Structures are given as C-alpha cells and as structure tokens.
Length: 402
Ligand SMILES: Nc1ncnc2c1ncn2[C@@H]1O[C@H](COP(=O)(O)OP(=O)(O)O)[C@@H](O)[C@H]1O
Ligand SMILES: O=C(OP(=O)(O)O)[C@H](O)COP(=O)(O)O
Image (cartoon, protein in one colour):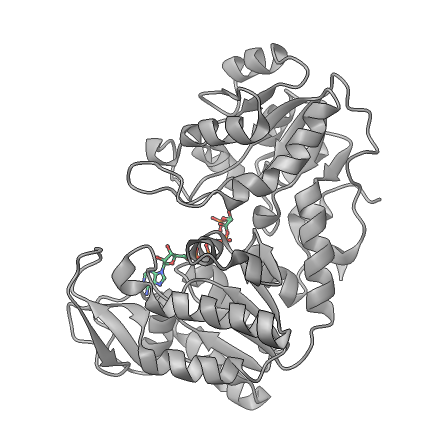
C-alpha cells in the first residue's frame, strides 16, 4: 500500500531562519459563540510547531475550518489565536487572508521563533480544486513545507497536495508520522474479530468507504446520520431525518454485499426522535420503522445500544468514526456516550484495541472524560477510514520519500 512508504520527517532539514509552511488540521468544533468546544486538534499540532520554533524557524501556519462556501466569518480561524498562543507560548500573529500582499508582508516581518496563522484556506474555492496557481501563491511566502494535517491527508487540496510542487523539502510533521505509524500497523494486521462503527453526518463522504470496509471487518455498526439513508433504502419512513437521496441505491447494494460477505451489518432498531433540531426539542423513542412525518432521528435508542454492546463484546479490534447522535445536545448524547463507555471498558478490562477517529467523535470521547482509556485517539476520521480501506492518502503521497 502506497501510504505505507516512509516519508521524510523533520530534523533532516536546516531550519534556522527558514520560513516553514506548516499545514495543520485545526478544524476544531466551535459553539454558537465561537468558543472552542474541543481543542484536541490544536494540542496535537503543537509538538511540530514548537520543534520548529525552537530550531529558530519562522512558522507560517495554515488550516481549513469547516466547509465554507466562500468567505464566511463563522468559519474564521481567528477564535483559535488565544488558545494557540497559550499552548505555543508565543503571540501568534493572525492574517486576514491566506494569500496576498498582507500575508507577504506579515511573513517577511516574522522573527525567528514567530508564528503567522493564515486565514481559512477554504475561503478560496481554489483550495479544494487543488488549483496550481493558488498553491503557488500559498507556497510563495515560505522556504519549505511540513504537512502535519493527518485529518486532511485524504484530501488532494492545494494546501495539502498542490503546494508540495512548489516547496522542497516537503516533509511530514510529528503528528502525521505518529498517526501513520500507529494506524498503518493496527489496520494492516488487526486482531480479529474486527468491528467498525460509522456514524456522524458526513454521509456522502463516508458511505463510499463502507464497501471497502466490508472486505476488512467482521462487524459493521452504522449509527448517527448514516442510519436514515439505509432506512429509506429499505422502504422505511424517515420523516425529516438526514438522508442522502442519491445514495439510496448504494445503501441497498451495501446491505446485500454485507450479507454475501458474511459481515454482520447492524443498524439501529430503535431511535430517539425530535420534533426540531434543537437542544430543547421534544423527544421520544420509537422503533426504527415508525418515525413520524415532521420528526427526525437524532440518536440511537436503548435497544440498539444493547445490541451494539453485545456485538462489540465479541471483538478484538474496533475502529469508531462518527457519533451515534447529535451528542452536542445533551438529550441526544446517550447513544454516543454509551459507545464511548463500552469502548473504554473493552480497552481497559479486555485489552481490545480501540481506535477513535474524527474531530467530533474525539470531542465526544473527550467530553465523556474517556480519551485516555482508548488505545489510540486519531485526529482524522475520514482519513483513518481511508487508510483502513487501503487507499493511498494524497497528502502523504505528495511528501518527499525518506
Ligand atoms: N442523526 C443525526 N442527524 C444529524 N446529525 C447527526 C446525527 N448524528 C450525528 N450527527 C452529527 O454528526 C456530526 C459529526 O459528524 P462527522 O463530522 O461525520 O464526524 P467526525 O467529525 O467524528 O468525523 C456531529 O456534529 C453530530 O451532531
Ligand atoms: O474534520 C475532518 O474530517 P473528519 O470529520 O472525517 O475527521 C477534517 O478536518 C477534514 O475535513 P473535511 O471532511 O471537510 O475535508
């Protein structure tokens, strides 16, 4: 698998006085008041940046946040500056853009040991299009490139892939290296039985991964927003629940493939429904087949949790990506908390290998105070699933070979 190749790492380059373009994944969850609700991804990016600063480098730091369409204040990286500054022990300078004259000036004025945080690279559509001109502009303010954004390594974007054509050396940061070391090992040769739990809201991204997962896992548990596309494909009424209409055929074929391959595919059998998408929504538990019109499924019910737990009791390796419900609302956090507790218990008492990936899944585990009970907390959900699929990660392939 191409992703297994060794990539160049830090320490091999002469860093003093050099401007280093660091692509991190600082895509952290923010609440309505723009307050960071989980800083795992920021903390995980600190060792690489600190190392560079201690070597006398000047760090130009780039990331995306969310999935903005154009410049959207809600997705600005500005709210991250105080926490970043605190963790790094330097006053991080924030640019209003990620390319252009102001960025050039601020980068040129950076002292050794200074950090310039660029504004959200996804404010430009050219980022996700991997536009070479845009990549060239990003690269123009630095001398070399470090990719520490494991969570975005499955995206061939300008700041993760295109930029490496213009900056050499292009090496992996410590977080990227740590994630690859752990996940490639755990995933290439998992202890069996092997279960994957997939939930969350990025249905169209993750449903495609399921087909390949069926070739690897013994048990596949689906929950969260993934559920309703499968329900609808089976002819159930799903009310106002999250559904990807153009994935219904795929969902049907996945159910059939799971059967043919002898994979135990578990969908929730009961659901916590809500009359609106809000923390104070009215809620009730209904069978999967009985979601009324105008209601939406926001969590898995207690019977489902019981079935999932029994299945997980038989496993040796579990990879979990995507919450079981809208855990940000207390009323709909029960199914997610139950999975977090079960995985912590299996890790500590039975030595099961548990890998949690994804910004929100990790946030849920942190919120439950169980992060240190898991075998590995990964900063990438989609990225760890694609690695598990055996797909090469473009952000890794673009780096220099060791
Ligand atoms: N039934 C559901 N309907 C809508 N959103 C959901 C549902 N279940 C979970 N979610 C949402 O999914 C989001 C996380 O999805 P995703 O980004 O795919 O996970 P991760 O960040 O762990 O990879 C959370 O914000 C959660 O509120
Ligand atoms: O949060 C992320 O992915 P994840 O939710 O799969 O962990 C990464 O920052 C990538 O974001 P994207 O899925 O919008 O490209």
